[in-house]
Length: 109
Image (cartoon, rainbow, N blue to C red):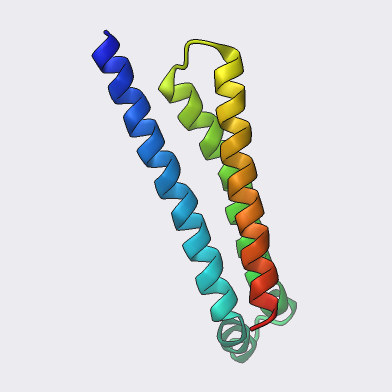
């Protein structure tokens, strides 16, 4: 049973790192291509949606992060609620702070 629990935690940690890096990659790609996306949507007569497409997509990524984090920590089945809470806080904080830094850096591009 202990080996199965370690396996769950290893899978959880791998999945947590994977979706966090994927979120960062999506935000970076959106920031780098914001003007292109906006222009393409403007040509398609998307109107105000064209101006909001990138911010909405970034917000969707930021909304998914806590949901995935909670799911992963539940999957990992940590022994103590305090451990679960610490991991959730650490993962969310690191994910959100780097998302913020990527967004701030993206406005300088």
